[in-house]
Image 1 (tube, rainbow, N blue to C red):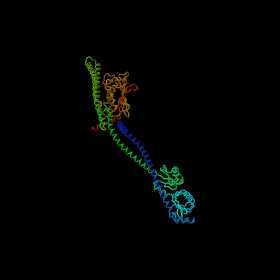
Image 2: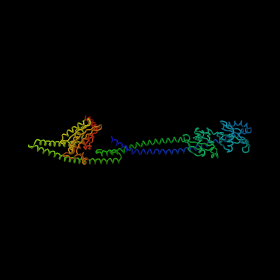
Image 3: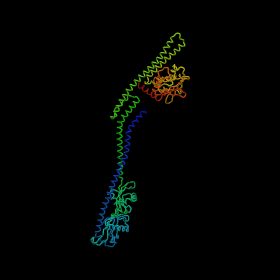
Image 4: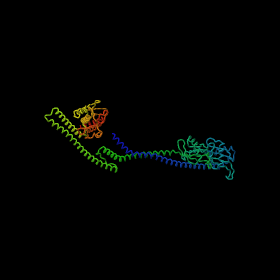
Length: 605
């Protein structure tokens, strides 16, 4: 499981090494792209709005010019009417009564008649009646400016008024009868008309008062409170925020020549909203984000495909390297991927074949060397046992030999036979290491007791006290009882031989401990211990120290048997100066071995 997780992490690291730069590049370029596009859209939107604003102002000026022309024509026609000229010869009361008929015929918003001294005789207007004194003041101020139509602020209302003289006779040499003034109101209707023609919001301002506007009342008040700079700099475009909306605004003086320098004169404020530009910017941002996400998904898919093409062969190479490091020389590589990866796979395959051959040669050499050492050791030990048996048999054949000495010689022959049997059993077991265990459910305590019984009957255990300690009653577990008993028996023989070389009374203690996770078998002796020169190599075959006989396979077999059961064996020194060999068998491994054995048994059926 841990190895599988490690491989998965390695694969993820290789793929993420390619994926993360793409993600970082994409997420880094996306805000930059949005910022650039946002700036471009804003600049283009402002330029477009500025152009529209100029066009809107021009549109109003064209409409205003047409209105003035019509107003001048209307006033000129009224001034040429003989009936109006005749009326102006009557008294003021008659003129005031008769003037209303001419106003109704003209259909204008404002109509006034003045005498030769430019004093107001009569005035008529649509809507609420105007204050006469304010009408006189407004007409007096307007008449002094120009003969062209002019904008007059009369009683908080804005009118565009054209004034024409009423002359009896020719215009150049005739007698002046009075003046006629005709005007149109600049009101909400005019504001809507200009707004529709200019496709913008418009506001007419006079004396910092809103005369007419297409804005909401709350926005009108905000415009009046913030338009100082705008009114002081007419014909210039600036940004303005009204409410929650941004506008591009420009003001145009409406008072004719000289009015541009009068911030209190009537002005037209045209406002173009950024709402459409903001909507466009939002749509552009959404499209860019959608395109970036689509490109990111497509790029991720392409990258995954490319990474698989690259990383899968590399992962195969990594697994082949790991297998080679673990000694598996049969792991073959597939020649997939790009040309460079295939070439690397072929080179690795050649290396694997060469290493396999080299390993085979080394194993053959090691096997020959092992056989040589084994033959030398066996030859020496067998000669030793056979010589002892031959000599003792020759002595026993003597008729003069006392019974006590004959019995002693018999015991020596018996010991030689036991030694040869142990030697042959060890060699046979050594050749069988690596084979499948013959598993069965057994009590560890029973295995230990059988091994102790065998050891006590061995000549090496003569005069040695063997003590068995069992902490808790053991339970049945899955083990190969014969092999595990041999491992414990080998440790006991080594312990007995070591204890007999010590200065104290020979003592060997066998302890069996068990917990939820493992089973421990400890074999302790009070001998002189293992020297440092042998401690590092004592589990290798044919290594022995301080023994009169023996091929040196006891500890090697014990270690191999423990490892075949998934356990370990180690040497430590206790507080009482006892040398302790411990076989530790993990229960989960034993259970797994048992489950595998049951499965094989079911398959065999």
